[in-house]
Image (tube, rainbow, N blue to C red; front, side, top):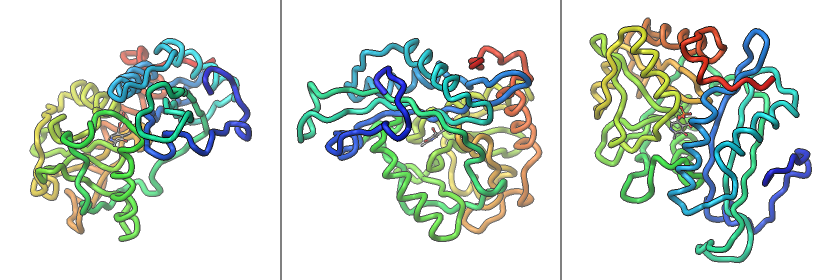
Length: 294
Ligand SMILES: Cc1ncc(COP(=O)(O)O)c(C=O)c1O
């Protein structure tokens, strides 16, 4: 917290922390994966740069640089002696000074948390519903800033889906096109092409999404970024989510319509296998994306 290593039980924040009341924080979700002889953090720099850009949108200037946060993150994982699959959550948030929305002059805090973390979903084959809640729109709040407050939108969609017996939700943008999951980007495969919503569909510019584009290229699978209709989603040959927490998660059903053959599709399998090779350090082409901890 703010540069110091603090024991879990002592890592406390004041009850009038601005971010707790108004959602004024920006954060990242990052994974680290064991390789044969190390633990490697995946695309750490890209995540920290995205967090700094999210902070910029909200005028949250911390005194720490990208390099400072990268170095502290590596030290933190090492200090905790984490060697299995790990989740890292850096957060920049507005602290306590007073009451009121204008946080000028308030402390801008930086904390990093690292914990062991396995699979995000309980099931390897997702059944989803389209949310009745639209993904937040550019006209109200920037969807590309990964800000704490944005997640109330995701929480509404996630709870609705789970309470209805689904694994997660697909959110549409305010025009009714497919946007993304509650914490994942979405891809469909149709007619031998990989299609994903573009930035104009209120998505977060996912780092896993970006990774998938490289991997599809390597597999000679054409990638297209454009608006996707519900019809295209229901009638796709394959569909999957991508995300740091979710990794590559096959979607087999949406709104009680089977996707493809109702099992993990062939391209989804290939991309998932290629992704695992990259994150576990078995593909030297992408070793530049790995930060070794030990
Ligand atoms: C709303 C939302 N969309 C997409 C993603 C996927 O982004 P990434 O691949 O960078 O984890 C996330 C997770 O961070 C998310 O919270």
